[in-house]
Image 1 (tube, helix red, strand yellow):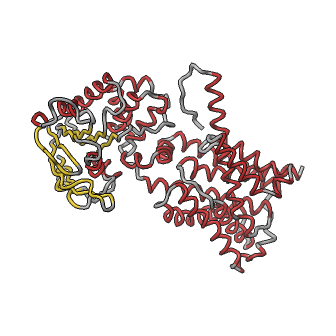
Image 2 (tube, chains in turn brown, yellow):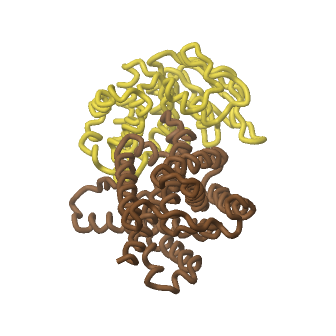
Image 3 (cartoon, each protein chain N blue to C red):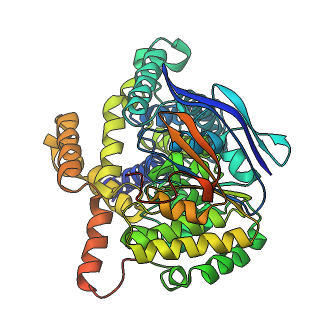
Length: 289
Length: 229
């Protein structure tokens, strides 16, 4: 039972983490290859605070704020670049983060931070907390997607020049999406740190950024349900197939390649096409999530 | 209402527009005619704020908006229907319209939607349809509707008839007439210079970025005979 709880908690954290990237990449069209750095910022912030005696739940807000604040800096610096240039800039953030962490003794340096306290209520408590926060985050995303803000995000993702001539402050909204997304990653990081109870620089490297990006691409950029399913599947697969964990970068890299070549709109797009095929007379309408 | 003074715009070392000036009152229409590369789109984009002019001024209702970014200009009343429509294909018709007028108060949104639906009943019929699945003519209507949602004082329309059937083009001009009646000023670029010149009050004929001729549209040397292209 304990093993199943660990797998389930990992899966929920992966969903939360993937959705936080979906907000940036899927909703607002900003490709990030350094999202794991924000997971790490949340994890380190939360771990340091719980080791100093704070209860886990009290560390969620600081973890989100610190990750979000660094997200503002990275987002502001990245506003001038688009597409592949943005991907390279954010990739630099990932290497910068692990490079800095490795040299900071107060953050455990290469050795990382061990002995992170367990969550209140043990594994069950952490699982329930993760479940509630993941559902809350997905609910907020559905609400955003269906609101005018979701339309604005999508218009920026599709054609930011045209969005600009409609009076939309493209820079402000891109930055806002970046802050929300990085704060969400910070929250996922806080939960992750107390799930594994040991964190080190390697837990938040480039491989993790590629992994979460492949969850978003395979799920379908911008599709809430598609990304949820993809994150759930891709986070569980290494538990059952050791080879995936051993060759993670290769497997997820190949997955990204094949998804972009043969299924560019991911599982979400596949489901949409399937619905249209079953109802060919129905005019193509927007799927709400 | 709109006063453009001595506008010069460059793309790097290339001067795409040399010293263009004109004034436009409420409800007046200006046609920009000329061959490809004449500088028509550059002039439109300089007014919209997408191209920052090297010199010159754009004055709207006595306010100099030359240094103001494009999204703020839109809020001040500069509406743009870009070349190729550029609707958001994965948003529905209604969502495209809401996005078009998002800077204005939410309380007036339904009224503005109704105004657009009155002008384009077909958009009402297709309100929940994805914009990417519309025909070219319907997408042009949506691009118009999206700009109208901003309650613009000046509408910039780049290549109104590009890729459209003659019947749809006539419908577009009928809509422009309605907008003019609402005191909206119109700046129009059209490959079909005959249609543009017969609609507009004023005209500027551009060639290689220079103003070759400027005056009343009916007096334009291009207004009779075949199109420029």
